[in-house]
Amino acid sequence: MFYDTLINEGVKACSQNEQGDIVATFSFSPDSGIFAGHFPGNPIVPGICQLEAVKYMLERTLGCKCRLLQADNIKFFQPVFPDQEFTLVVSCTKNGDNMLVRCKGTTGGNDVKSTDIKARYEIK
Image 1 (cartoon, rainbow, N blue to C red):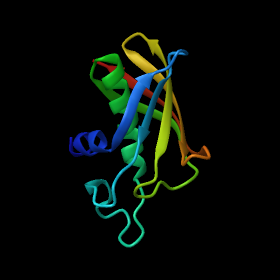
Image 2: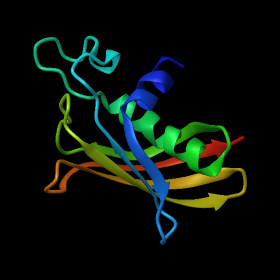
Image 3: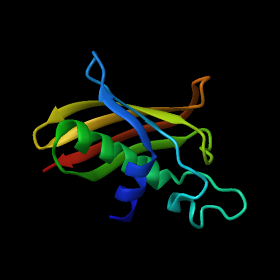
Image 4: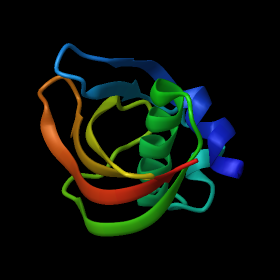
């Protein structure tokens, strides 16, 4: 998929912490294709890219392929701008062939809440 390459270019770190949560930090340069058309003159990281980032984090850490099955609740509280660092923390629970995911995102060094996602991913 188109976003896979772009997400990979923006990841600064991705690992699992002692609590088992997956933590990743991202930052996209103003030249990144992630901003193409979203929005000209006032670019922000599209919400779909944050969902794709969660998939990236699951696949990279768990070593499997994932597919979004259901997004129960998605909220974006703050926009994420070019060159702005943002962190996603993913807590997940395996349920058969599915992974129940809760993702909380923050922007900048002051940990401003930016994202809250509850979703279910198929594990392949």
